[in-house]
Length: 105
Image (cartoon, rainbow, N blue to C red; front, side, top):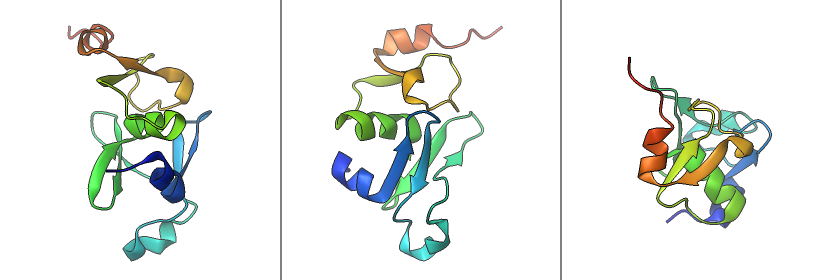
């Protein structure tokens, strides 16, 4: 399981911008050193692949900042899944997270 220490060895997280930067990129892609990590999915969420496993950036931000995985979920306060700034993230129950989602019209 990915730990805070291992994550901090691989990536640097800027809580002001919500961006992760590669400190130790995958061996097959060393040109990523110092570059932003992750890919943005069509739904707006950023995922970062570490050791073959994809993680949501907002969940990695919790691990990076607190040393623990968020339980049970993570909520983007402003409802923008691309905004992974620390001040925009909070642990949430499933019902709070769903309540904060935009309503389908």
